Image (cartoon, rainbow, N blue to C red; front, top):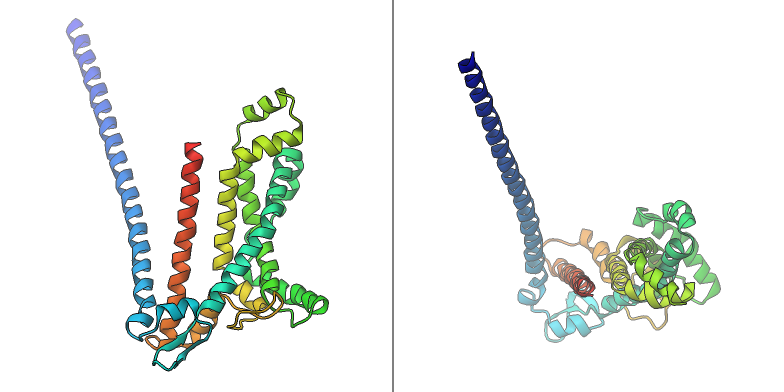
Length: 317
């Protein structure tokens, strides 16, 4: 009997060891498979990103390498007629009006939208959090298609500007108003997250030292959340700079530098989307549009670089 019990105990211990070894091996293989899948996904993303960059760059520089366009004329020229040539035989690809229009509507929209978005974020987090969470945050116009904003701009904004000011109503002012409404939810949502990330201990310490509610918000909360607020504004500017359809519907799409905000203008995205379907691959017109696409891609990388710099400073603080 004792021998049988000892043998059964040995068998149980061996089974436990075998099960533990099997579990350990299973965990190891699961971890290895997870790392392999993650590495594969990251590799595919990096490969796609570099492939897109190389493809767009190879197409974008063709206007300079193959069609003998001037880089100085592209950035500082004001005449956009890729199918025509100047006295030197170079294509007329002056993109300054589009560059001016893109930066104008983006900067103006950010200047107008940022105070509104940050103010709404302060109200939703510091003044009335319950009302902000239950009422304001759900009605933020996130996810609405661009064509809806453009249609509203054509139906409401353009007639209002036409009747109030001189001109047709199409122009940088109309594009700025539409973009301001479009990027408002983005900047507001990111600003809310930035303000909420401020520790409550800082608020409590400020109030304990005798600061008022508004002094705490202005001198403690907003200053602490400043890197996150700047990131929100840059994100909004990145979306505004790359917006195509809504701006195309209200800006007028005239390749000239306007004398006022109420005259028709154009952006890089509006000219690109209007002309891409009416050109032949490999022709001068098509190569010029690829150059505009390359500039838009590089500007997106610039915005990402700025966001990363702000994020690093935020981590250091």
